[in-house]
Length: 91
Image (cartoon, rainbow, N blue to C red; front, side, top):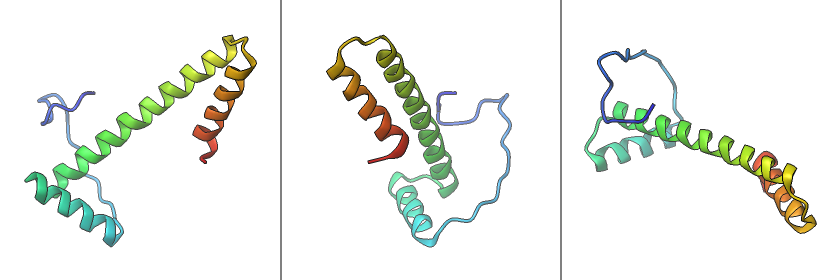
């Protein structure tokens, strides 16, 4: 779902409780204040961004894997393997 700034009329909000480390809570509050939104809205936006980022990372991973499976160039294969390893295991 693409963020449109507000929930659609068919979308139901689910109440969740979570605990944040104090340093994270301070950062969220500061961001919310700067953007002139509630801390709840800021958390929703941050979660939505995180979910989109994870989906993009997953898509990128499969694109690289596909390129690796079709590549015949040894140098490109090594570069693709290295990139996939970084994505999987970090640097």
